[in-house]
Length: 168
Image (cartoon, rainbow, N blue to C red; front, top):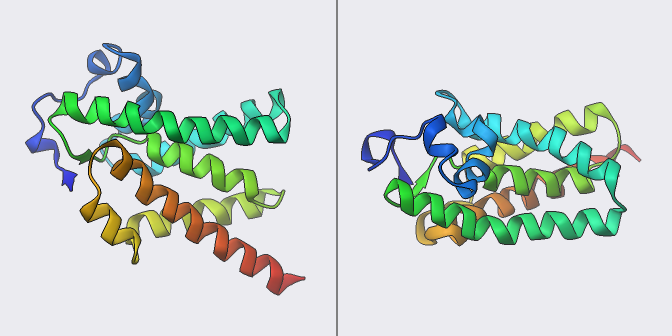
């Protein structure tokens, strides 16, 4: 259940984002305020966030942090969704950030691989093939907001693995 801008009980703004840490994180530090393609802008936020985290910790610790970002995202997105009046408002982009950081974790090294990972993730997140479309429509609240992006990440990773296997 996607919520449109007109259906919101509060219009998102910088003031709204800074009114609670959950809103700031849910909106990807402001990326979700973009008028066009907030999900794409939110996904882009994952690049520097992942880069900083990867430089500061071991791979097992990084994977744990990404899993925690996903789990925490359920509550963050639910809290912000409730404040806005419910639903999966497009400006809530923590789901894209957490899911794409997972994609980056498993993406082969190299700029072209990262670009391909970004394109594939955005493709599946926007197109929503089954079962993504089913869960997007049927699962609501914070888990619903987060879960469809996790599935999109899975599709992107499967494609990356197939492409890598075909090239070797």
